[in-house]
Every structure is written in structure tokens, then in C-alpha cells.
Length: 331
Image (tube, rainbow, N blue to C red):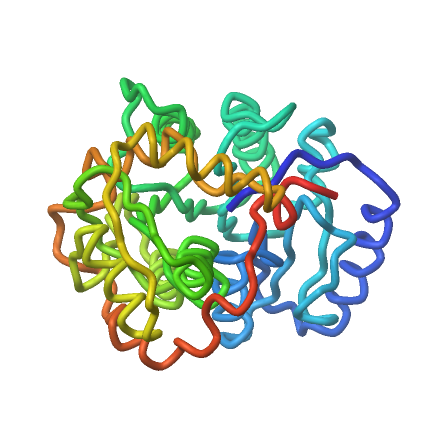
């Protein structure tokens, strides 16, 4: 999940007051902290925990935004620049579910900064006495990767493993769900443009996993004692070309799919992004897709069919464009 670093504000005082009230009314049930519970993956993890009767707090880069959980989840800003405050926010939690990350570097929000912020979070969790970290990573991370996204993910995994805290590292492929930016914006383009450009031949593969399946894997992992690294892939494998055609056919799109060299397709996406005021696609994302980094050799961990899900949810997809910059980078 993308979250620029936050500052300690009056929201912290609200969080402390809310924590006291929550403790009085919770019958001392177990407390878990979820980073990014107002976002995408974190929201589904928080929902599952609440359904299990577990108290939930969230750390978020956007504490000023409407709380989708009302009073059930208390929110505090990320305090990466104030480790004692971060330790205080994590105090009393048995599990930390971490979804914090950035999709691309922009301004002061960089992959290097995201790695350092996560290291600060891990150390704060250790100092606060958190018993286990459940971390959402990515398939095929590598310290030697030329792609900052995958290299940074590997650096974070290394920090968790070296921390001495019990851990479960979940490595999803592409995550799909109703709030997903990728599928929604592909559907939006297919609804409105006569042509849809696929970079290269489109034969590169991925195994999309449903966000609720991923949340279930994450919550189940907290109950295990052993350290765990688990690939989280869905039950179906698609080439990117097959995926785009499936979305188009499901929504009866008249858009013609064309294949262009990756560099040209990326250039066109930048033009579209200029008019939309957003970053539609990045070079690293294209390279990662075309390098087959979003597939796994492990047995599928997810159960939900993308094809069936699309059929059920097609009316809700692509009705409007979802801006990555608005959701995660702009305040």
C-alpha cells in the first residue's frame, strides 16, 4: 500500500484519547495494529480482525480522511520521524500487520525512504514488545534486482527476518478487488477509448489473487508460531493480453487491443497520465510484468476466480478513473 511519511500532529492526541476509551470498552480483548486500514489490503485485514472480535488500531499516512470503520478502529498518523511516539502507538499490540509501501518514487516519497521508514517501524514494534509481524510483500523480491520496487521489498524482508521478531511474510502477485486501481483503470480505458495498447507481445504472465483471500491468508498466518514466507497467488494464470481481453469481453467493450513496443506504450501512457494528472504506468512496472515476476511456482494460495469475480462486479468497474496520486500521494 502506498503511504507517504507522516508528521506527528494533534491527531496523535486524538489517537491517545481514543485508545483510552477503546481499552475501557473492549473487555481487554487482543489488540492488533494494521498499517493502512483506510486503504486497500489493510482495510480487508482490519475487517476480518474485527469480525473475529479483535481490537484494531491503524497507522496511516492520511489520518484526516473519513474513517470507514467509525469508532471501531482508532487511527494515528505514521510517526516515522518520531520513534518514541511510534513505539507508544504500538504499545500493547500483539500483532502488527504491515501493508505500508510506495508504488513509485515521487518527490520526497521514494523507495529508499520507504525502506528506511519500514525499518523504523520494525524497530519500534520490537521496542514496543509486539509479538509477531505479518508483512505484505511481493512475489520474487531480490536484493540484486535492478528494479527498486522489488529490491526495496527484499530489503524490508531482510530487516524483518533480522529483527528477531516472529514473522510471517506474505508475497502476493497482483491483488484484485473492487478498490483495485489497476483493474478499475483498465476497465475505464476499455470503456472510453477505441484502442487499448498492450506493451510488447502481451505474453507475460501473472496469477491475480483476490484481496479477501489475501486478507484471510494474512490473518491465518498470525495464529502460527513458526516463521513463515508464503507466496500468495490466485488459482488462475493469465497472460496480460488474455487478462485485458477478458476484462474487455466481460464488459462488452468495443475497444481494439493493439500491441506496441514497450517503450512506445510507456510513452503513450505518460501522455494519457498528463491529461489525467496522474501516473498511469511506470517503466519498472512494465519491466516487472514482462519479466514474469508476478507468478509463483508454489501451489495457489487463493481460491477466488478472477473470471467469476469480474462477471459479478463488472457494473462497478471503470465507471470513473481512480487516481494513484490522489489516493496515496496528495494531501
